Length: 144
Image (tube, rainbow, N blue to C red; front, side, top):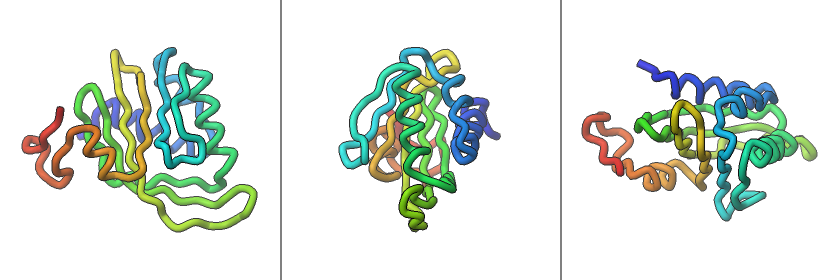
């Protein structure tokens, strides 16, 4: 069964694919943090709704036909861990890139996203969330 948080996360990713960031902003706390890894085109942390808006628009400015194929969403109560692959085409170059693995954690409080952290890959996101084996039954997963 999909939780409300998982549903909202999937709706947010679908909206990004359409170029619409408003559902993500509406789901976010006013003090939200957006964290990109050091390997990202724009590494670092952005703060607040405007920081999140700038970060998300940055992705949309670079990519066309952006698609997220979510393979797993783990609801840890106060965090959602999502893994999968994304694909798309460079807006300026028109280059169609092969699927790229992704992993991120969305921290939640009172039904709002307070932090969104993108990782270099699924394994890194799972480790950061304290999930030991994503293929194990949920009752056997170790989380911090």
